[in-house]
Length: 386
Length: 208
Image 1 (tube, rainbow over the protein chains, first blue to last red):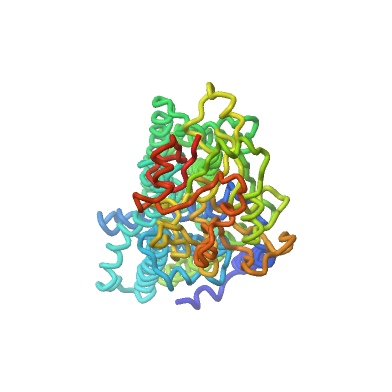
Image 2: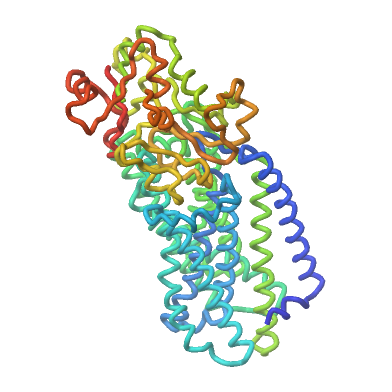
C-alpha cells in the first residue's frame, strides 16, 4: 500500500521535498539547541514552559478531534463520514507524532528521555500522558491502516479491528483529559487550577481539530478528484459550531468565577493576558485577536446561511484554527506562569531558533500527513471510489 | 527550619547564608536574570507571603528582607509530578534531587508554588568563579534546588546557611520530635509559613 506514496505528480514531490527541507532547517536549529541548551529559547526561570509545551497541548487537541468523525461513523453508522474517517485518523497520526516531537525538544536532557520508562512513576500525570499518547498513536495506526487496507483489497475491514476502533473513541477523550490534568492539578497556579480545564480543552479541541481537517480536505479536494460530499462537510461544520460555542461558554464560566468572586489570585493571570500587568502587555493584542476571531467565527457559524456557504466555510475554519491556536498555543501556558509564584512578572516570547524548531516539527507532521493522504487518495482512485 | 527574621532585620544587608550556600554547592552566578540559578535568596514580605501581605502593612515588616528557599514540604507537589522520581522525599522529610536522573522536563518547576526551583538553561560551569571541589557541579538541562545540605548532615554538620549565620537567625531541628529544641521555639513564638492554604505543609517557619 505504501508504494502508492512513492509515485506521484511533480506537485506532490515538490510538496514532499519542501516539507522535508523545512524539517531539516528545524533540525539544524535543534542541533544548536542541543549544544547550547534550552537557554536558546525565550523560556526562563519564571516562565519555564513556553512555545513547545503550548504547541504540544494544541496538537493533542487536534489529535483527539479525530473522534469527531470516528464516533459518528463507527458508533452511529453515519455513512456520510465513510470517506472522511480515514483522513481524520491520519491527521491524528500526524498530530500525535508532532506532540511527541515537541516533548522531545522540550526536554533538557534529551538522551535521558527513557528514564520515564526506566523509572515508571504512577503518581505523575506525565506517566499517564506518555501511555495515552503512544497508545493513541498505535490505535490510529492500526485503525487507519487496516481501514485503508480493506479499501485497497476491496473488502470490508476485518472484525478483529472493531474492538480497537471502539477503544479509540474513549481513548481520544482520555488524551486531552490527561493533558489538561498536567496543568489543572498544580497548587499555586490559579489560572490552571480549574475543574473546567479538561472540558474546555475538549471543547477547543473539537472545534479546532475538525476545522483543520476541513481546511485540509478542501486543499485535497482542490488538487484531486476526492470529494467527501456536501452532507459530510455540512455535518462537520455543525460539530465545529457547537464545540466552538462550548469553548466560549466555558471561557465565560472562567471569567464569571474569577471576577464575580473577586479573588485576586483567580483574576491576575487573566488580567495579564487581556489587559497587561504594570505595563507588561506583550500578549494583550494576541489574546484580543484570538477572542475576536473565535467570536466572529461563532457568529458566522451559527447563522445557517453563512455556515452552509461552502465557499466561505474554509475561511471560517481558518478563523477557528487561528483563534484557538493563539488561545492555547500562546496564552494558556504562558498565562499560568505570569505572575510567578512570588508575584514577580517575567514576560515571554519565543526566540527565532525556538520558532524555527517548532516550524520544523510542524513540517515533519505535515509531511507524514501528506504521505498518508496521498496513499489514501491513490488507493481510493485505484478502486474507482473517487 | 526556623528563620528569625527579627535577627535578619537587625543585620541587614547581611548575605552570609546566601554566599555560604551558593559557594558550597557551586551555584553559578549568571548575570542574565532569566537563566538565574538560586537556592536561597532574599524577597520582600509581599513577594515571600503574597497572600498575607496587604496595603496597610507596617513599615517595619514592609521593609524587612526575608530569606526564601525550598520549603521541604510535607506533601511536596514537585515530588508528586516528577515522572522519574528524580526528585523525592527522604524518610527524614528532606526533599532531595537526583540531578543525574532528572530529564529536565521542568514539571516540578510548574508544580512548586514557591518558585524554589532553578533550571540550567545553559552550561553553568563558566559562571562558577571559585568552585568548591568537594561538591559536584551540574550540567545544562537539569533542575536543581536546596537539598538541605544532605551531604553535610551525613557528616554530622549543620547546613551551610545555618553555620554561616553568625547571628543565629537560622535554626534547624526535628519537627517530628515533640521534645526537640525547634518545637520549643515554635511553641514560644508567632511564626508564619508560606502559602499554608495550599496544603503542601512547608517546613520552613518564619518568626516575625
